[in-house]
Length: 236
Length: 105
Image (tube, rainbow over all chains, first blue to last red; front, side, top):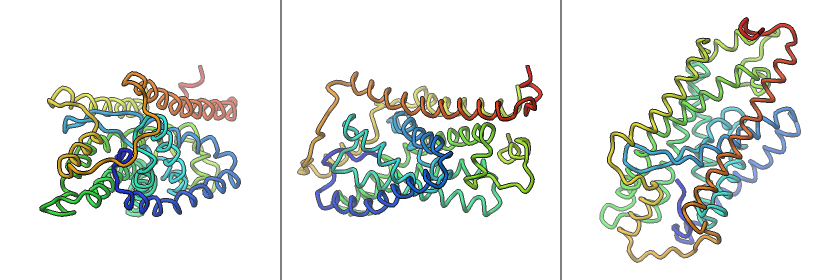
C-alpha cells in the first residue's frame, strides 16, 4: 500500500496530506490524553504501536505471485480506538519513508490516509458491529483486523486510480486494475493479519485481563472475577 | 497441553501455511505489489515522471533487508517486553493462588 515517492502528482499529494493532517493531530492529542488519564496503559499502547511496526515490515508471499505486507493497525484500533493509531501508523510510515525508501514523504499524506486513518476506522467499525450483532471478542477482533487491512489496500487502489485514470475506462477501470494488483494479493494477508491479531488478543486476555477490562474490551465485572470467565470470551 | 494453548499454536501454524503455500503452488516473480503498481503506472502513463525522489535510499538490497529486519526486531522486542512484564506482574500479584493447576510447579 506504500505509494512510492513522487508517484502522486503534486496536487493529489497535497490534497491527501491536507485530508490526513487533522486525523494525525487529533491522534496525537488522543495519545497524550490516553497516557495522562491512564498512565498504566502506556506500555500496552507502545506494544500496539510496536505490533504495527512488526507486521508492516513483513513482506509475505501471496496467491498472485507477488509479495505484500499486513498493516497491524487493527489491534490498536480495537484496544485504544482509531485516533491513537493515526499517530502510531504515521510514525511507522515516516520511519519507512525516511530510512527504507519505502513509501515517501510526498506520498506520506496518502499513505497515512489509507493505513493510519481508514484502516483503523474500518477495523473499529467492524469490531463494534460484530460485537453489537452478538459476535464474540475473538470473532470481532479477527474480522476487524482482516477487513481493516483489506480496506487500507482498497483505499490505495482508489488513490492511484484517481491520479492515474485509465485512458479508455477512466477512474472506474483504473480502480479495477489497481484493485486487482493490491486487493487480491492482500486477501490471504488480511486473513493472516486477522489470525495474528486474534492470537495477540487471546494472549492479552490471559496475561492482562485487568488492562482489557479498563479499556472496555472485556466487560467490567461487578464482582472481581478470575481469569476463567474472561478466558471463555475468546474461547480460550 | 491446554486447549487454549493448542488453539494458539494452530493460529501460528495457519499463518505460516498461508505464507508458505503460495510459494509452493504459484509460479511468481515475488516482487512487491507496490512495484507491480508502479509498473502499471509506467505502462498506462508512460509520460509520468516521478517528481520527487527519496532523500535517502538504502545503498543495496542487503542494507534494505537489514533495516527491515531492524524494524521488525524493534517491534517484536517491545511486544515481547510487554508480555514479559504483564505475565510477571500477574504471577506476582496472584501470589500463592495460581490460575491454572499446571502453573504450581
